[in-house]
Amino acid sequence: MRDMGQARKPVKVTAKSVFEVNHSRLGIGVFSRPLLDAECRNFRKAWEMEAMPGFEDFQVDKSRVSFLASPERVPDAWNRIDSLLASTTQNVKKAS
Image (cartoon, rainbow, N blue to C red; front, top):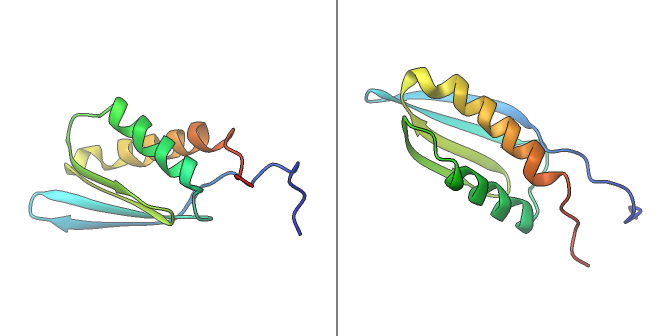
């Protein structure tokens, strides 16, 4: 059993895929562990509050994130996802 005082491991994108879709790119990233419900909500809220130009669509669930963006925005998207994961998952505790 895990010690509840122990911090959860930070979430990272462990696998990235990018596919061409018409004149856009579909990016799919798989997380290193499933997000908790609160982490998932915080991530969505943070992404929506600071929407970046050039993104057509975005989805996040407990195990992965996906986005549709112009080709030149793909590197920015991965950087943004890494940043948001770090900030939205660090202080969330598992509900008992």
